[in-house]
Amino acid sequence: QVQLAESGGGSVQAGGSLRLSCQTSVYIHSLRCLAWFRQAPGKEREPVASVYTTGGGPWYVDSVKGRFTISRDNVKNIMYLQMNSLESSDTAMYYCAAGVDIRPSSCSTPRAVLFGNWGQGTQVSVSS
Image (cartoon, rainbow, N blue to C red; front, side, top):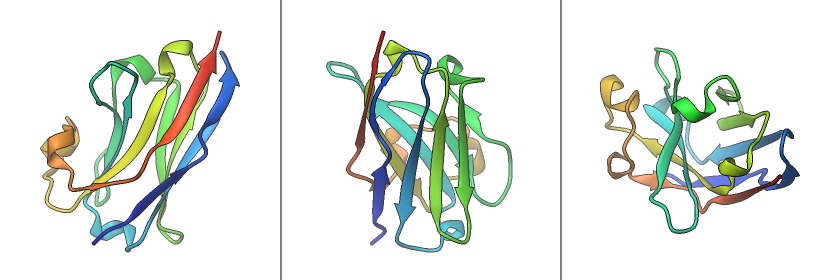
């Protein structure tokens, strides 16, 4: 079973930056689709960014485009989410997710139900 472990969350002021990390327990290329989701209190879990490990560009939700960047280190088997110009609306628990049977078209429109592997989450709090 794939294990994912997030880190890097914290409390920052609006305009600040954080970098989230997601350590995977397996070779990252074996995980076809990687994604970050977030869930704010009282809201549904929403996709933030995703990438298909064997090709294709990343996908971002409109609200983070130009501010967040998803990337990965194929040697260390770590996925990152660089978050710049943070806003109070970015406050949420952030989860990394991985799917081995997700097609590229589905990876570019990620839905939580498609992912079978999840981390425990890391809290991001942005104060205005």
